[in-house]
Length: 160
Image 1: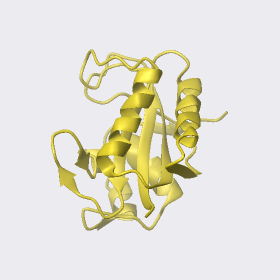
Image 2: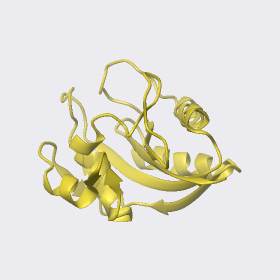
Image 3: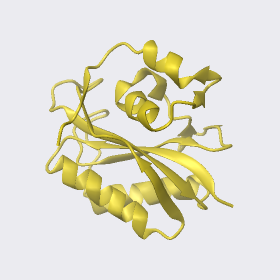
Image 4: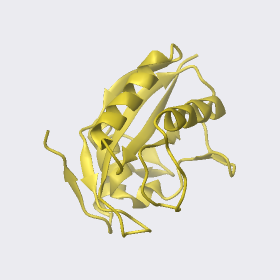
């Protein structure tokens, strides 16, 4: 049975747009994943470790028959294919593919936390997510209210 999930994809090293587009291609190549919506691209200032370039981010809505931990493994496969290196927490990266939400699944496992930790504090996740689904409820709170209460990093729609 197919479940709806949302993935946050972003990066700030190299051809960021190309890496995001390649990530989408790799999602579409998996027969157990159907990409149903893709948000606009957004430029966002870094959070945490701020001495780095701005990020380019999107959110993708998918339908998948993969179980949550298998979806995570596939997201990590995409990161590996695009040469993701984990050097500094919240640091520069070629690509980041995160499971933000997974229908009917909540977990605080150290390997996979869903809803993604701190996502409701991050404009780079919430603004594109709100763009593609204005009716989401996250942690018993309407996404519209979460977006209206955001403080912190600057975000702007990336014009192609």
